[in-house]
Image (cartoon, rainbow, N blue to C red; front, top):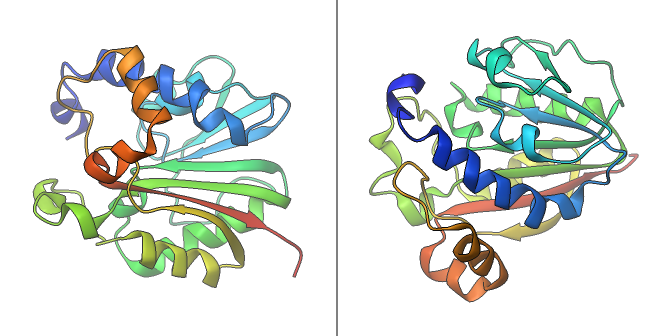
Length: 212
């Protein structure tokens, strides 16, 4: 499915993430942090981000092939207990993955595992399509199972013990499958939140783990 979906688009996606990672998401990640990419897929994020230690977890066999040498891949079904020790991560990141989980219980399990593997004051970064703003095309992908919005994901994150620090209901456009703009235009888009309110179809949520 993913080979068909992203055929011819891998170079474009990697180029887009080469801008997104350093020019937006890096601000939440220190260069000595330990970072986990949940549902890493083709590793576009984790390969580009600067961090002390980098991990990718995904059942997709392509993740092992696409990960850079410095990325340690945990190849497993994320709806089963993760083979990662508790309180080892500074940041857990996930992009366009949660909507692929089969059930709401699986979503809550993954968020609970995020909470477990994060250190105290660790950061959770979640990006995904917001059904409130793309309901007409949300179900065009066969493997979208959960209808998620910024509001429902905030509720799920809080139920798992995180404190939500930032919510951007409209951030990136819905998909990068089609031809993406040049790097300078992507940087300009990131610098102009007024454009997000026009073109943004994906939410971005920042949560933090604190001791209870």
